[in-house]
Each structure stands twice: as structure tokens, then as C-alpha cells.
Amino acid sequence: MREILDAHVAEPGLAVVEVAAADDETALAVRELLAARCAIAPAHRTTREPGVRLRCFLDLRQEAGS
Image (cartoon, rainbow, N blue to C red; front, side, top):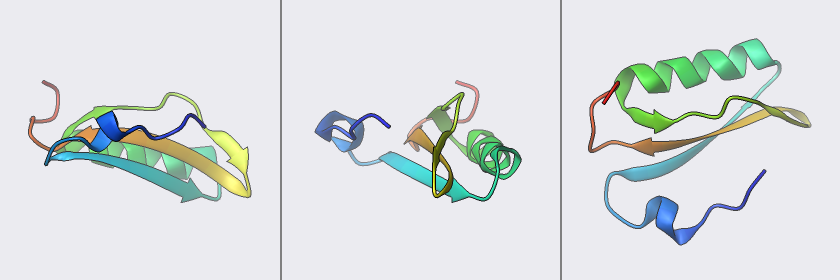
């Protein structure tokens, strides 16, 4: 997974969320829950570590879909 940079969290309202789940379906369902509540730069693929990992970059200052 790529490194989290200072720019990803440089202002209030910006966040990085990493999801750890047992399978792709669960990780992607969490991504959809986040996308319904705020603007995200969603990950389109998961990585295999122990379990499945998915990272999303959130912007809580914007509404979902903007």
C-alpha cells in the first residue's frame, strides 16, 4: 500500500481510513458505507496481508457524490 503523506491529512476534515476485513466483500461494503456519508477517493482494489486491507481517503468537508 502506498505511504500516507502529510498532504492527505493537512487540513481539518481530511482523513485516511484503513479497513481490515476477512474478505473483499466486507471491505468493499465498508467503502460503500463511507462513500454514502462523505466525499472519498475510494480504493478500487484490496491488498492481501493478514486478511484483506483497503484504504480510503476522506474529505468530510464535502458531501457524498460531490
